[in-house]
Amino acid sequence: MDCDRIEAAEIAEKYVTGRLSEVEQADFEMHFLSCQRCFEQVQLWQDMQAAVGRRPGRDWRWFAALAVAAGLLLAVGVARFPRRVPGREMARATPAARPALNLTALAVVSPPRYLQPQWRAAGPTGFDVAMLRYSSGDYAGATAGLLVAAKADPGNSAAAFFLGICYLMQSRNDEAIAALKATIALGDSPELEEAHFYLAKAWLRKQDVAGAVAELRQAARLHGPRQLEERDLLESITQGAPSAP
Image 1: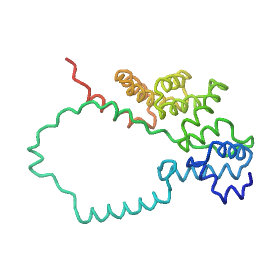
Image 2: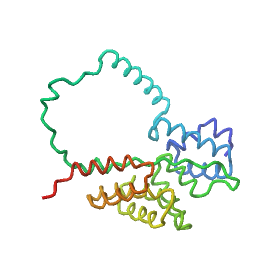
Image 3: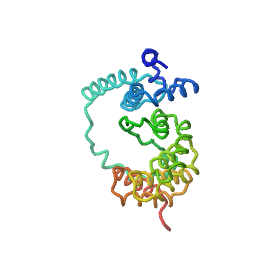
Image 4: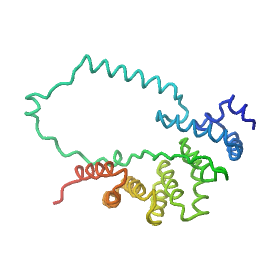
């Protein structure tokens, strides 16, 4: 592949947004394994995709325009319809009933973002290529590479963790639980807190509320960046769970 032709045909963008065939995708990966210029183009498109929170196959420019329009509409709405101050009718409102425990809603998963490392002299590894697919939303494509990376290095907590996330995103819940447990079994690692958090989500998918609560409590003890989410999720489970007899 020629770098100028790749840039002219927007191959890096098409790779990130999932618009290449399997053959084209494999050919491009073989190229950027040894090409810093094209590897950095892929990273650039991934950063742009993550910045607007879009899904593969959608035009990020359209989302940017939509965000501007939404901001203008919100500003007009606030100006024309000022916030209402609660009156006496709020005082007369009856207490709300305890909400039902909706495990399906509580088990919804937003995959954690992965930041690609800077280019290394040795070039990207198989794990790096798998994570490029992960970052573009190709969880099935990333799974194979992460399996190889985890098998080659059983102590690679990142490979085990993101393999679990890929399984979750494909609703392969039993396999996700096994991979996340393997991450936790490795002990202290950068992924430990999130492994407990996402394992709790997997248990919720399995209708195992007690298992989810146990994992959330383990995660909360680590005082990591997700502690507010963990606290909110625990509170939602507690409020929706039936009272003890």
